[in-house]
Length: 184
Image (cartoon, rainbow, N blue to C red; front, side, top):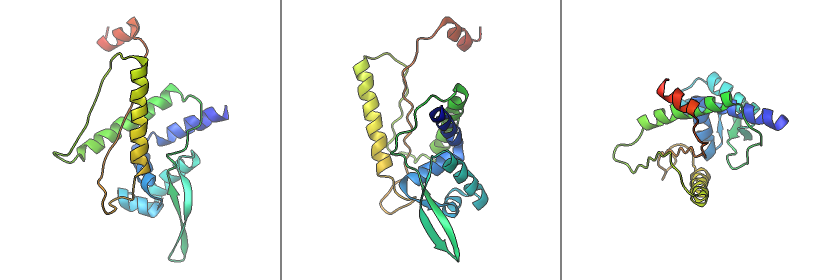
């Protein structure tokens, strides 16, 4: 049951557009709350609050300290490479995460560089199980590639990119689902 609570807490913690942006920043480099605040245009207090929520949920880890003007600033990173805890989040928590992800995608699309290489794909279809397995493997490989090569914001020789993927097997629709879609 503790794993279920950890999974739900983690999903609830990341189901916020600012926290999704923080996780993206902390994938490429360790940063302090002050650095995150400057990068995202937040107050230091707001950045610290969001970092605490993420740290309490185990989504960020301490990655050292920095001595600044007589004080100590903790630096954090997102351990994207670790396997998340098992368990199933509630439907409500899952939907909150999907909504936050969709909102963040809309924000990112507004920043899309005109005439740059872009791939957008959307599909609801039927394929052989082995095709689906291979597609999931390729998406996992692409995610690991960009996460593993992420750098600090605006680091020399880098470009600002987005990779968002939501891939899942669907259940067969029921008559009730069809009625709900058509408003009957």
